[in-house]
Image (tube, rainbow, N blue to C red):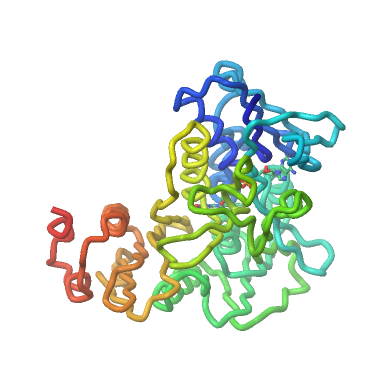
Length: 381
Ligand SMILES: Cc1cc2nc3c(=O)[nH]c(=O)nc-3n(C[C@H](O)[C@H](O)[C@H](O)COP(=O)(O)OP(=O)(O)OC[C@H]3O[C@@H](n4cnc5c(N)ncnc54)[C@H](O)[C@@H]3O)c2cc1C
């Protein structure tokens, strides 16, 4: 009896790879609705839009890899429903596939707006279409000043387009970064000629192309229809198991008890998809491993790399390390004196250090964080 993985994105792919790496010998079936080899999404809004890399380079592995690893990859096929009582899934073709363990990794889909003619960016198909429309357009309106919207805006500006970003909140990336970081990015985009309209929901009707990046909705239907509990995601325990001990859920669709948030959360990041894939594989292979990875994320806009470690949501104090004018700085977030997150701008070394600090639970004071002459390594030593 095999492991069946529903969803061949970052998380589903990682589960299959990690199972084989752990020496799991039984059949693995990886089923994906999209007609492509499993691929990573980050390049779609970065290198690919900029014309720096072809769409094929987003593939996580060449086709030959799957045969060599004895991973049965079925693409262009939807898992239509789960039959938990028979431990089987039914595909869109009508075929039935039995499982010993089932991993749900169906990801998320874009939130859409009730407006016609808008472009979105989630899949390879979206990216190829958006690139064509971008090439043909002179004026672009981007709805949503979050990561995806801003990456698209940056790529469009580099390609010489006139870009306006409409953001409903009063600052950019408001959900995830501090006002200092929001303001820094507003300035960077402004320097590249992008007009940022804050507190402004309306798109520019005169634009040749309107792109919306207004968030995603987790794909919960499979789980819900099978009677599994769902909330803002498919609910799993710390071992990433759903209420059915034979069914795991991971990646963008999963809501799990997050020790860094002190609550159940659902994260949308490559790190979370990869690390949850690893944990699910470890647990299927018989280890009892709780998921405790430090959350991290990155975004590239122009020559600026923002890397985030931890979750800053509950912060009651923010400390700046370095000068935003230098375009290299970090913001350290504290909650009741304890470090909970670090956002680093063009400081990859500090980002890696932050991940280690958060994983180790080492004690860093706000004063030490603010003092650039203080060597962060000494905390870990
Ligand atoms: C343009 C873009 C840029 C991004 N950039 C970054 C970045 O810079 N850094 C970062 O950390 N994160 C980034 N992300 C987020 C990151 O890509 C996601 O968090 C990650 O892909 C989640 O992996 P997943 O496997 O959970 O979901 P997905 O990658 O969405 O994969 C799920 C797959 O399951 C398929 N599926 C759904 N339902 C079914 C079904 N019933 N049967 C079969 N298949 C099904 C879907 O078609 C999809 O292919 C970006 C996302 C996008 C869209």
